[in-house]
Length: 88
Image (tube, rainbow, N blue to C red; front, side, top):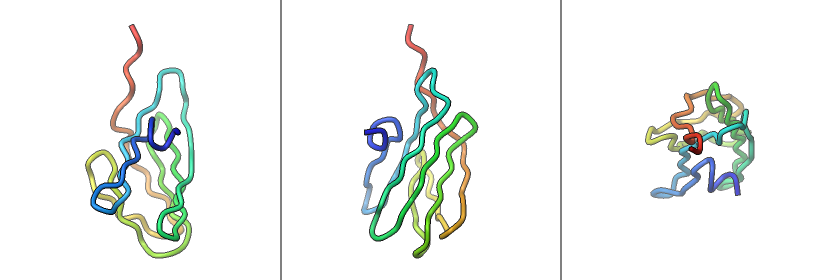
C-alpha cells in the first residue's frame, strides 16, 4: 500500500521509520497507522510532511534518517526530503 511504498514505512530497531516521496502529478496523500496502541496520522504534500499523534504517550519515529519525538495531540511538520523523478 501507500504506507510501505510511497511513504517508505519500515520498522527499524522496533521504531517506525518513514522516507516519504511524492509521485509526479500528485499533490499529496494521507494515511493512518495504528502502532502499539497509538494512532498516527501522516499527511504528505509538496510543502512537507505532517505527523499527528492522537493521544497516548510520546512516540519516537524516524523521518528521512532523522529521529523525531512526536508529542500526543500535536502536529509535527517536517520537509519532504525526496521527490520521485519525472519519467523520461
